[in-house]
Length: 548
Image (tube, rainbow, N blue to C red):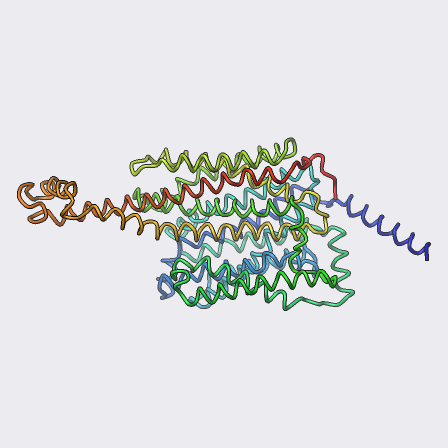
């Protein structure tokens, strides 16, 4: 008995050593470029369709509200698959799962472009979101296994380029394709990229020993999918994404539909937590590995990744919308305002990747949130006569802060995590970023709508005939619009035009104040993350971290 136990221990030690020393046969950077290709395509697709909605609605004979389901359907299915990707990998292997996701994404993209009606397009977008949901977590886990801890900073820099730049490029590229070709081409362009990605993945990517071991064990025990847990996950995160996407449009809790999905979301997620803890207790493979949250080096970066998604997507929506509605920019000019920020991130990512292995990642994260917060304070000083150049450089400064967040947060997240749990880490961190992005977008839309109404209601109190300044202003402006400034200022030629002009200015001012409120909250929110970063405690630099 003792001999058998010793033999088993030796075998396990040999397996652990083989897994620890495993490295892919292909060049790691070739693998990194291969998996980043598909992830860039997927993240791009989450925002590229936004500007094409009017064209899609007109082409398929649908209303603008109906066409928004093209976006919602994608986000809902994407949110369901993201956290489940690590679980599904257990049964079929990571490489095979990743390739299935690429195939599903490519085929559904082609079907989206060929869709003859809106219901078919929405169905194809659900498939596309399901395929895309497994790409980013799988890529991040592949990079974590392919590179040593000392090299991960540079590897995550490449991954960060795809995840951070794609949402900024998406609306501009989508607008250009729609204006110059046809909205269907925003889907067709995915097909050749998916084919190339599939070919390269098949040739270069390998599953490490711990993945092969998990698949062998699952096959030995038979295919036992946790259908109840998966159903809870789908209803919980699917409902959450629906609420965030449709909340403002349906007046939040003024809508019975939103109330229903809120109850469904809370009930499903709470039940899911207890169910997953029960699965751990009876030693079954849980869909969500909640034990990761026991680690401070995972739980806090999880929150930070949520805030990164909140800030990235929130500001990417806020700035183009602000310059178009208040400054009269075209969609192309609005894209050009934020594009230099994307270039800045591209240039900064390799620098940050280099620094991650040579300094405490916490300092880099603190610096990133400091830059982000001060950029919001600077933006809070914008006026209605701000120049294009001023707004553009403000975005560049803001983007430089975003570059200091993504790589260090990801690096800290993997600290001390066994290699077998890399898939779980990547699935949950990508979920945090995506949900954060949805919350940020919903926050901007809600605060802008309600803030504008609130400020306008306060300001309009001063625009009455009994107000001396208003009466005097109307009198002076009547002359400009063809009237006479003498007599009763509230009657006569030019009065209505003068009143309309002043009310238009009031509307612009109230909208500007609403934008400033949002920016102030962003600034405070980002600044509050700095003490949270310090609470992580000192971690080993990537170069000192043990290989696991």
